[in-house]
Image 1: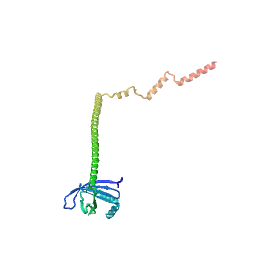
Image 2 (image 1 turned 120 degrees about the horizontal axis):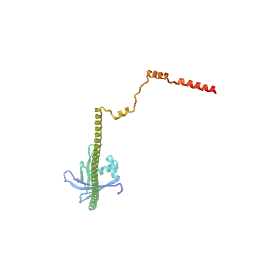
Image 3 (image 1 turned 135 degrees about the vertical axis):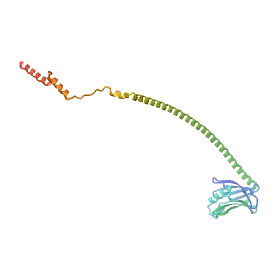
Image 4 (image 1 turned 180 degrees about the horizontal axis):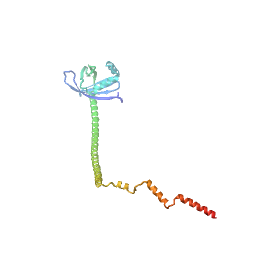
Length: 265
């Protein structure tokens, strides 16, 4: 029956044989397979076994309108972990047999799941196998707890280092910002002082009636422009008639001289 698809559970139950008897503690170890399961039960002194074959499981599953896998999963759910709303019992079934049962609710109806278990031929061996399973499970759980604790401590240490580094970076950032802001304020104040100085100088120049230097330079090197009137033109013409030769008079005389020279030759 052992295979890779098998699952194993062990549940400690507080049960009673009837409503008037006192509670007793039993351990139920379950071996779950795809189409069948087996149970080992002990109260520390006696032991009982239940081997549900594939045919038995099919018959019970059909009675509950379930598939085989659904029926096995349902039983594993209630016998792997104790449900507080369910009532677990182990009752006498005669000839040393016991009947293991638990209640559940389906569609508003209270129902009961139960299987008949036969007495074990070797109660001590059965009880010892259950205890061995519990011890191995406890050892594995302890190892997992130790590993988880170590991982938690490592994570805690890393988190502490990250916190210290974060605080250090935050301090450095604040110092850098303070230094930059201080330099910025110094430069800003210097610029403001220069602007106030220029404004005061400009105010003094305006108060003394002086133009800014740029306007004074723009007026240098210019001469006044005077247009020529008709009187000026007439005066120039008169001066030419009083004794100065004009260009019209000079040109004919030069031509006459040239002609005389030609005749002489």
